[in-house]
Structures are given as structure tokens and as C-alpha cells.
Image 1 (cartoon, one colour):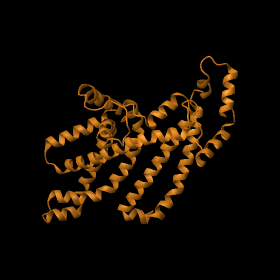
Image 2 (cartoon, rainbow, N blue to C red):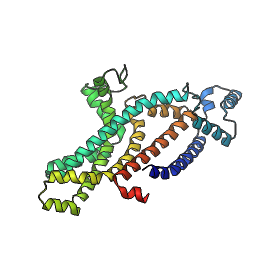
Image 3 (cartoon, one colour):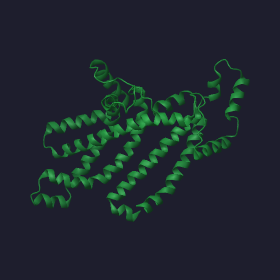
Image 4 (cartoon, one colour):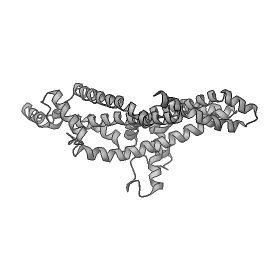
Length: 316
């Protein structure tokens, strides 16, 4: 397994390097100037030029890139242009909240998709089949921010049983029941489209496995349908894990909108604030981190896939 991961490592590093170049270049092409934002609308050209010089924005682009990437490698991320404070501190504060939110959403996604897919394949009831089909269609069709607003209107305003936004005032570790109330709506909002997609994927994989020769033999031997489903589930998991890895990246991307709807102080809100203020260093490192996280998730997913299927390990 270690040799398998080592073979994948060079391509992962190459992708991360190319992503850093692309992110840096694209941000320089986006209209807007951090120096102008910092100086204000009434600033003179001399004042703006002085700010650009202080920030190092008047140096050649290649030199700016090398300075930035050297800081990333050494862990010296510098300070924010407009938000204020050290970038490492801003990211650390936001990352905790985003990881808690996406972790809860991931747990809900796996739980909902596994239960729903198994029930969908196992049931003979047309009513249950129609309910699951309709639920999946709605969950996939509705944009995340629409689902979030609907949840806030129902459970936060009409039936005020859950907080409409924010995080627990005394932190997540103070009281688990209070933390769960704050987490439930944003995590569910984030998990619904991912769980609907994974439910369809797993259900189709299970139906394919249930027509495999070894299942037919077991069925002929009198094994119950519930036990057949239990036997087919491990065989369907490798492809499910691959799809889950892709959806984890989607969860992180969707967290930007969900954090905005539920005023969740995570990395999504931080990157939105940084983009509004043309805060290049913050935007750059957050985008690079998102690419890095996606690469790590893919490596973990491939490793899990290889662990479940020896043909992948041997074939590399």
C-alpha cells in the first residue's frame, strides 16, 4: 500500500504546483486593485502607488510568485492586506468551524445514502420507491442556498426550534446538545444533494451486484434477500468510495454558500470577504488549500479503493 501511495505522490505534487501557478496568474487578471481598495475612493495616485510599493505589488509578477510560494513552503503566510491579522491565524480560526461543519455533513451524507440506498434496493413497495425517487430528485435539483433558506424559514422562523444561524456562543465543546442544534440545519443543507447523488450511485451498484452469478447461486440455495443484500454491499463499496471522494470535494465547495446563508464563520465566509476586498494573499492560500485538500482526499479514496480491491494495488 505504501509503494502504491508513493507512486501517486509525484503526480499529486505536480498538480499542486500547477494549481499554485494558475491561481496566482488568474488573480492577477481579475479586475480590481488591493491598493486602491486600501487607499479609499479619495486617495491620490501617489498614495496608491506608495501602498502598491509597500505591498510589493509593483515588483515583477514572477518575483511576487516566488516570494509567495517560498512563504507557503516555509509556513510564513504573511499578513492580510485588508481584513487584518496574520493569515495563518485567520485560516486556523475559520478551518475549525469549516471542518466541524463539513465533518457533520459528511457523516449525515454517508448515513443517509447507505440507509436510503439499501432500503430502495430491498423494498418492493412502489410507494416507498416513489418517495425515495422524489426525495432524490428534489434534493439534487434544489440549489444549496435555496434549501438553506427554506430550512431557515421553516425551522428557524415559522417553527423556531433551531437557531437560524451562527455558532454556539460558548463554543462547540461546551454543550453537545446545543452544538447539535446549531449544526443540524447547515450540515443537513450541505449533505442533502451529496447524499441524493450517492444514494442513486450505490443503489445502481447494489442492483448490479444482486444480478452477479455468486448472488444467483446464493439465492438458489435459499439465502434470504436481506442477507443477499448484506453480501452484495461490500462488493459495491469500492465504487461508492470513489464517488464519495468526489462528493467530499463538493461538500467543501458547497460550504461557501451554506456558510453565507447560516452566517457560519468558516473558511467560506473568509474567502468571500477576501475576494470582496481584493485580499490576494488570503484568497491565494485558501484556493491552494482547497486544491490540496481535494488532492489528499483523492489519495485517501484511492488508497481505500486499493485496499478493498487488490487488483488496483497490483496493477498500480
